[in-house]
Image 1 (cartoon, protein in one colour):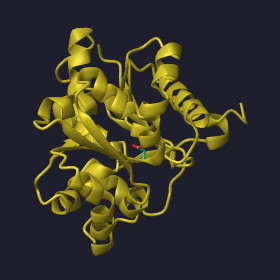
Image 2: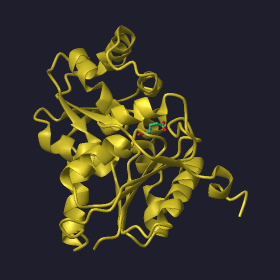
Image 3: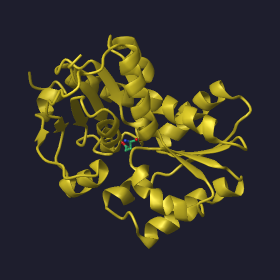
Image 4: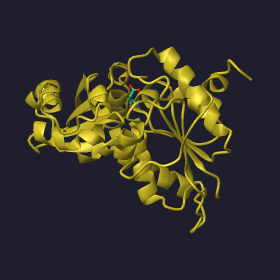
Length: 272
Ligand code: DGL
């Protein structure tokens, strides 16, 4: 079925998920929406995150998408119930795939989770891990400074290294053998995180795991695009922030061309 897949995130961090989807599903047309006008979601309340997630989804539904990928850990942690209840297409978030991969990989059953404050406070990863294996010990840590560091482009920087050392110290002390990167931005910090954990910990990139789940779901539901379906990917944002294309290209792993800024007032329903 050659309808597009819709993907949204609070900003452009979700392009790390797009990168993985492009890799393993080259025939699928992807339509991305980044809510750059309202990022961060990670410091907001559940009610607001649910509202934003529904608005993001409704925008993508205009493109007749066959599946929705919630490429934002915060929205996946706090708004999946609302999305599943209100949408009649398959919805895939990043939390369950990440949690499942961590449970499968961890040998000592001591798993660390890092993410935004909203993601960690929601306990979504904890619940998802414990549903799979109640014996796992989970050490979760909100890391609110990491998103701004990535947005600033400080990927390999002593300030980022120090910040990570401080955030991860307790988790390392607890002898975790697996760490879930529970935020769209963190895969870009992989190198610094490896340094901080002295290469002793398995890192779980929720985006990578999600792409595998999306592929499986499309196969199971007979929704895969036909081979050679070469429709252009579309990228939309609600604002064009400073350093946008530089950072966006780092997330996507290739130059980011042709991004369309949507009319924000129409999007949030002030103007019809
Ligand atoms: N996309 C968010 C996430 O994955 C990070 C940025 C934000 O706080 O909105 O949790």
